[in-house]
Figure (cartoon, rainbow, N blue to C red):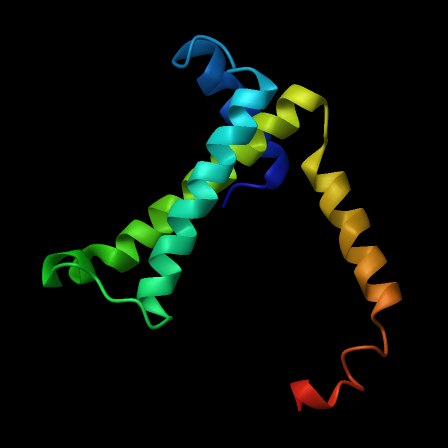
Length: 113
């Protein structure tokens, strides 16, 4: 299993050896939005009310969803690498913030019971 730190290193190596160089940060941001849109399109069809155009699309949708989520992660890691963000540290800090802030919030939410 790959850690987030290892994923950042692996993506950086891939970009430098196969991808030649990183796209600009604004280009990668636009690509990230495009990839998130592809996840949203599949979610609307798999879990929402929207239907697939053909039965064949429905058959491959779960595999496609995993692949699109991986695309989102890849581009997010690219952006983190480009901007000097350590995603392990950022995610740990974010989870700690949520744990402290939401210690009672969700437990007392009647909508979640």
